[in-house]
Image (cartoon, rainbow, N blue to C red):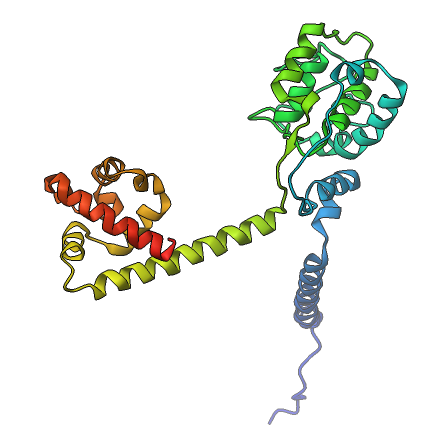
Length: 316
C-alpha cells in the first residue's frame, strides 16, 4: 500500500506554461482593444487637414463657391487706350482683383506658385520670369485681355468673362508690374482688340446662374420632356382610326426611343427634307425600322406634318 502523497508536484515549466496562456489571452484582448480604438480614430480623421495645406484648402474652397444669379446686361463702354496706359491707380485696383481671382493659382508674387496651382498641368503662368514658359496667346495687353475673356483650352486657365472689361484691364496692369519687360501694344493692336469685343460700345454680359441651379433646370427640363413624350405616345395609341398614326406605328419599332430622338434634335421640324434626312440616318439607333428607306416621300411628308403638330401640341 502506497503512502505517497496524491498532490501534484510543483513544476516550474508548468507554471510558465500557465502564465503563457494567461498573458496570451491578455495580449489578444489588448490587440482587439487597440484595433477598436484605431477604427474609431480613423473615422474621425479629417483627411483634408491631414494631407493638404491649409492654403490649398482655402483657395479650393473659394473656387467652389457658387456664383450668384445675375441678369445679363450691357457693360458701360470703356476707353481701351486709357485703360491700357500704365496707371498706378488702375494697378492698385488690379492688385485687389488679382488677389481675389488669380493669386490662388499664380501666387501672390506672380511666380506661378499659388497653392491651388500645384496640381495643374501645365502649371500656372509665371508672370515674373517671362521666358520660363511659352505663352500660347501672347504677352501684350491685347493678348492678355483675350486670355481673360476666353480662357485657354486644355489648361487650368478658365475664362473670366463675368468680370467687367474695366476690371480685366486693371488685373492686366497689375500683372505687368511684376516685370518691366512686358512688350507694348501698338495702336493697331488696341484698335483690333476694341473692334473684336466692341469695348468702346459696351459689352453684352450673359446671364449667370449657379451650377447647381443649372443642373436642377436641366433635370426639370428632362422630366418635362419625358412627361410630354408620354402624352404623345398616349395620343398616338389612342388614334386607332387615324391613317397617319397607323403609318407611323409601321415606321417605329420603339415609340419612346423614337420620340426621345426626335425631341433631342429638333432640326427635323424645319422642313420635310430635314425630317427625311433625320429618319434616314441610323434609323435603328433612333427607334425606327429599316423600312423607313422604302416609304414614299409624300407619305413621309404626311408623317412629318402629323409629328410636328403633336410636338407643338405637347411642347415636347
